[in-house]
Amino acid sequence: MTLREAGWNRVAVLSDIHGVLPALEAVLAEPDVSTADRIVLTGDITAGPQPGQVIDALRELGDRVLWLSGNADRELVEYRRGERTEIPDPIGPFAADALTAEQVDFLAALPKTATLTIRGMGRVLFCHATPRDDEEVVLVDSPSDRWAEVFAGIGPDIGTVVCGHTHMPFTRLAHGRLVVNPGSVGMPYGRPGAHWCLLGPGTDLRVTSYDIPAAVARLRAECAYRDIAEWADCYLNSRVTDTEALAVFGPRDGRAAATEAP
Picture 1 (spheres, rainbow, N blue to C red):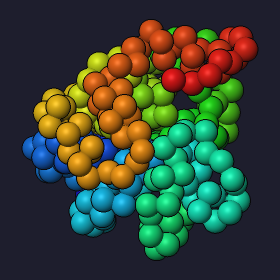
Picture 2: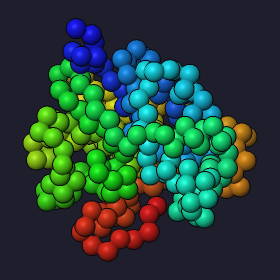
Picture 3: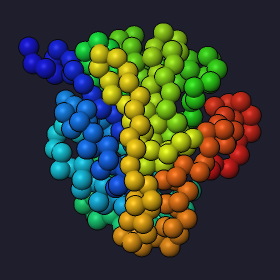
């Protein structure tokens, strides 16, 4: 029996890198990431200051990496292909234009979901926002009926669902399934650091500290985005608090009228 058939021992999950190469490099240097059987990317890989460099760094890791698309990746592809004229995130058009044509095609071909068997956890489904949609919002305190909606259509063999999108790490039980959000590598809300998680045989939420002032200076030196100084200061220093993010995202899981995202 192969390792894949028996189940992977250790799987590192990186979500919402958002084109921040210094944060990604810090996570990839973690021993538990460098030795993991698989690295799963749960979307929003590229929408940020260094999209091409992030793709290149991850592709160097070969088939250890399982790539999934997020809504922001999809938006970059649509923009480059003339299928939309605007992107909600102000840095989006810059990131889209920074990609090569081959990188755009690579992102366009990424799946939205994937399933792996992990020892101690069984069948684990990975997605960006929810299994059925790359923009839906679910949170640690989303009501039970909301989880029932987003789990509709998932087979009974799936015991764990891993998602990203909201940039805040959590684990919770919902309708008999464990839900895991590793948080964001490149744009964390609530506290600084590059957030990720390690799966197998349990769930371990991690945060990697790195030299943020040096990373901000590096982005300012290497990225031509007009507002990179403000962007890097805001997101690498996690100036959007978890309270602010929850206040914005909460209405999007059906509680009330939505407001503008941070």
